[in-house]
Length: 260
Image (cartoon, rainbow, N blue to C red; front, side):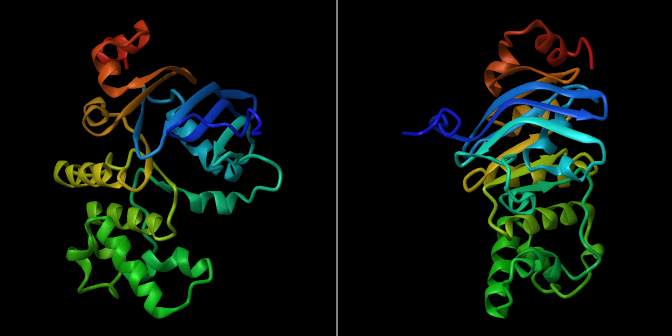
């Protein structure tokens, strides 16, 4: 019989239970609990400094890299707490990939960017790496734009292309979950639209959690929305319900533009 910790709800990909994050003595995230649905896009919204990115980075142990940061609580993936003793944070980051606010391609070729992760994991078969590169770039809706210049520097791509390359790089190691921290905030409207279309496609194969400052973007692409305020997760619900009939007045005030 499964323990209570191992039990996950039907359709749940990740279960976050009583998550707290401290930066030194500052309590940045307070007792946040959230069920992340499989093959769903979950959007995290709220004003600047409210805990969205702090929550997101806790999901794949990015805070391990922050001096003075401390995390308590549970993040359950496939029945196991990613913070349990003996769990390798590097392995977790392969399973739970991260796309950052600004595109951060390596100063290498497009091909080397996409195949970096698989090579690090020990894959050196050229045919297999070629296949991974093409498949990842196709999934990122970038293959047709770059297939004739795979050996050129990734830094020569436009901002929007660089961000899709970073998404391809994450997908190259077959993650289960993709985290995105405002992935379109540095992009123009056309590039933003391409990223949004891509996210809608990604949820067919992956579970996506995205931080966004744009409520319009959350409404367009997400299935579930979670509202954060002052380090607390105030309310979670289907995106339709959250934007049409929020239960908490603070959520309503934020969505209607009364603050934030």
